[in-house]
Length: 103
Image (cartoon, rainbow, N blue to C red):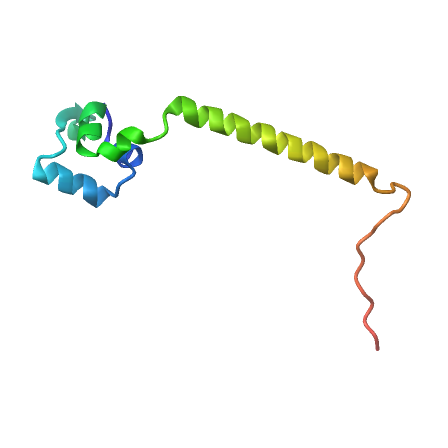
């Protein structure tokens, strides 16, 4: 079961769009007692039925795979930067100083 904020994220729509779908009857929900108050909860199938484009959304596994590839790419870039820094002449000391003001 999903909360409204999760529906918004999954369907990639605005909160207003979700409420419009609820009010028009396009998006079904169940009222669930949570912390002494009733909360609208949604089934994933109902979200996909109300917002068909959401079903084409990237799956969790695909997202994890893409993030792992990005991490590998960033690690490679970091290693290359380290090599470039080490390749610089270590005998030359570079120090940042303030320029003296002319009087």
